Image (tube, rainbow, N blue to C red):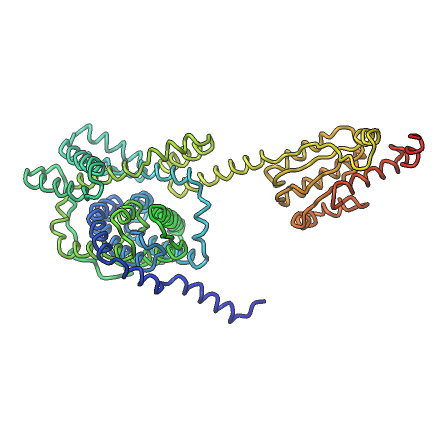
Length: 571
């Protein structure tokens, strides 16, 4: 048993490895000017997004700004990526809307705090490395579904109607369309469409220019100067961040909020690690630490609710802007958060005049830009399985829940992968090695002995087919299983093999095995199959040894004449 001091030292070392290191400071000093400029650009892009996602979450624009500032600073300091930019995101908004409807704003803040604790625990347990096992079709389907949900969430503000009651996006969208049909608000529609069009066209024309802020400012000026009262503004914003407080925390509700907290933590982990992976792929030489990234997101989500912020994640859109504008260290993400803090303190009266329809246009354009048509087309053309996983994940994201969607995508991907692996297992009859037998002897042996070679993994997904094929063995006296090419075996495969040996034994068929690997012996022994095979020496290192034993068995049972008699008959 490991001594307690050693376990404590390992635990301390594990936690210490998650904290900021000197190398992070060295990276900050490399190109501070470029990082400061990148951070300013990201802040300009992030401002309307933070406002819009705060409004969409149901806690208001001030919650989005508080999240962008607090989570942006802490995730940059403690996270595992030099390029990640964190804050409120559309994916998280989708999860928060039903929580707000059922538990109110206090429930969302409590859920964020609980999710932050869970993320820190996942980091300590080194769960970040498992992100690599999420298949690409699940990621693409998840992203497509989120884009659709974000777009549908903006319909009430884009149409200029109050948000209908309910927490299901499809029902809310239909209610908004019906309300608009009864009392059309073309002013709001015009602002939303104009902002979205400017952003999409500008991104193609001059990708480096932050057209989102340009479009929002223009829409606000138009609404103010022309007196378009139908374009509702954001409303009052606090002049600064609120003091940290735990006043929202109700211990009695923790049990009821556990499931939503797990969903938020799962989504924060998934989206943050996906975003960090995207950033790595856009650069050369940058690699994030997944466990440190979970730790940073956990710290950010513990702190953000204390300032009235919603749960945060790594933001793919802002991170991509950060990389494209030349960022090379955490200084850019820190700068982005500081600039947003300055805006909160100095420009709140201006920000609160922004029309909600303009923010809806920003998020509509963001949803469109999230969809990579080339990637979707590639996945759809790859295999039918990939296309099915993508569609199922996207539909589940839209109809059900983001976490359920990922689970469904992973389960379907796992089932299809197991099916594909199981179909690769080969169970082929092979000719007997001639050895030192004459042609006549070899033909005689082949009449009574059949050899099968098993290629690939013998596990639960392929075991049933193996049993069916082995049960159909023709009327022979000896079956030799050549197992040197079995790549892996689980308990189900071993039990099926044991069952097959017993069934053949009842029919008077002797089963011999050759080439069993050491790893397979342990599995076979655990279920009693190895003992059965070893009975009367039926487990051999090589196939020629097994054939010699089979011949001796046939001679002993008078199926073949003794070797001496055959030699005498040949003379």
